[in-house]
Image: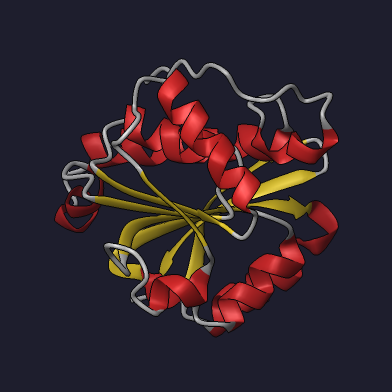
Length: 199
């Protein structure tokens, strides 16, 4: 599967938007894992995985930034998408990028994070695919704030923004919440992980 064409994202020369560009290593590993997840869902005979990726019903992107991952998921076929960020400017930018990429009105965007989703502030509270391209210490904190409760039973969580030296602490946090790493990608010092609930 070819990575979807995405346009209009901020230049990587702008440090304020570094994680939201297609050139940043964290975004690259997330896009690879996202693309691989959709490929896997199309090819597998495992009905549990098919329920996630062939139906492609829902995606939540925590810390969506410029919206690149949410928009990529939409272009890969996901139908119900929510992108949230604690920065209102990021949400404004995500709206603009959705329009530039021809998916305006097809993604729900909002200011918030895990607590706001759990509190019912958005149209759905659980997803088949959960994305978080944020720093490792934030991932760990959100996991300990029950971020995993946003993931459907047979869903997949894709995490990035993790330096290789921080990887063990993220693995430990995932294990505390019954999540097991199923795929791993690395670009330079940056690691991306794909995890699912243990049986």
